[in-house]
Amino acid sequence: RTPLAPPRPALPVGEENPNDRFLADRFPNLKPQISNPKTLTTDRIFARRAFLDLIGLLPTPAELDEFVNDSAPNKRDKLIDRLLTDRRNYADHWLTFWNDLLRNAYQGTGFIDGGRQQITGWLYASLLTNKPYDQFVRELIEAAPGAEGFTFGIKWRGTVNESQRREIQAAQSICQVLLGTNLKCASCHDSFVNDWKLTDAYAPASVFADSPLELHRCDKPTGKPAVVGFLYPELGQIEATARPERQKQLATLLTKPENGRFARVIVNRLWAKLMGRGLIEPLDNLDAESWHRDLLDWLASDFVASGWRLKSLHR
Image (cartoon, rainbow, N blue to C red):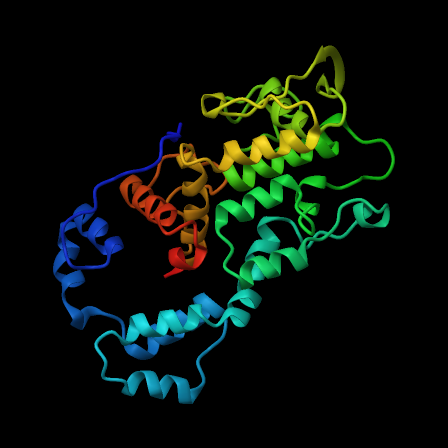
């Protein structure tokens, strides 16, 4: 299983980009290419990729010519910084990524019944202001004004399976999206795909319940009460009795510095978005073997050191 401890790998010595230093350490034959400026992609290709990756737009002919004709040695760094300060286009572009990840685009019975609400306004403002990721997640879990829809879940019509109730949905979403582990199988019975038990799935679900939950195995009541808890009790316990306070405690445990898994998950997701494949695949199983553990861990530690700024990670 991926360790919980905060990642602290040593950065290989060199003058190249940290990513390249780790790759050169893994593949010594790449070292001459990485160190040779002539092997860099052309300015035109670099600008096109940077524009599309960061703001989702192509450079205009004038912008491209200006960049190509710029003789400054640090012009690529300057271009990245300029694109990242384009708050409006950055937010417009990355809103799609977060809509998909947080299931914000869902439309169905939850809205008809006055249940689940979209979080678009809160999400867009968070991207526009480059809200620190730990604060971003705390607001999602604590159901800050405008962010309630993430944990409130879908209110299905008619009779539904116990494993589809809103509290279970909240636990599944949080653990899959933010911790890189899947509770869907364990929400019905002890999992066949990982080590989680039925009681493990009900523990975080109970955080969001207004009254004690009863364990249901394969949708049949067991007569046993669920116990409120966190998947990784070594990080702490949830002791509050009132639901809002339980949500705050869960948010604190999830985002505390001792939880190195939290940073690794989002770094892996963004790497996959930009590179086409995660350092760990599949993205929702962070316990799978990493293609390059030290690179992932260094990126995660650097992300935390930046103050949890997503734009720093993009840079």
